[in-house]
Image 1 (cartoon, helix red, strand yellow):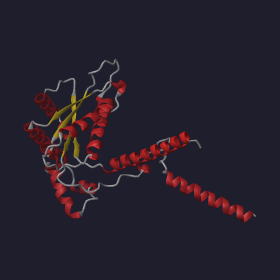
Image 2 (cartoon, one colour):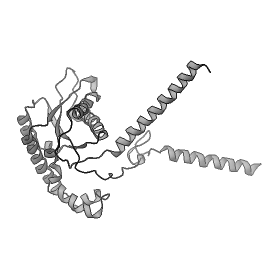
Image 3 (cartoon, one colour):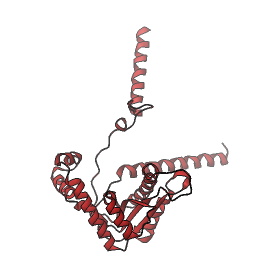
Image 4 (tube, one colour):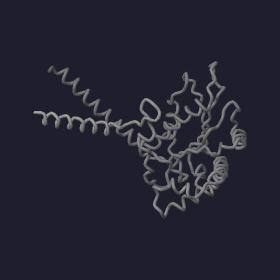
Length: 269
């Protein structure tokens, strides 16, 4: 092998190994991401926040129309408190009507001693006051009409989706940097709240605020979240109702099939 070829092969091996490490890191970030709602109110370095905000620009959108706009609230503490008040009021209405048993069932992963307190925070809405302690409160907006396409792209099918992908870009980057993030739509569940927030922030009626995405300094680390359903519980293969089968199970079945074939071959010799 020539020296040039040897260098090329070595370079490819390093590049492949580097890609594998970055992929593993991304998988870890996706799996470890949590909603962290208890924040200290401290300020994030400006350069860190700007890097996080910039990640939203790289989300995909139909025809690259980028039908998203974000209002960053950082210095207006009064507006943060208003959003916290609206969030608490809306959450109290939603979760105050929930049966205790229903909510407890979804908190099964928490220690028994911590469950009642968390449930109480949900029921009285105080868990959702975290915008007032976030450094950055980002009002995420989408539009059905602000674009030059003749095709109607509804928020239900497109606007909300592209905004969510922009939020996830910011969330994963912020999480990788050690910051707390949480996302809530409860302040925008009531059309009266939407009108009020639009008036306060000067949002045109051609744009619809969908959610508040909050970033801040975590008050304390969160425990690992609950496990998710297995792939078989969420994905079908080729057709609805046919569970996706993971590679491990497929390989196991193939291995067992080969063993049986070998046994049959020996018994016929």
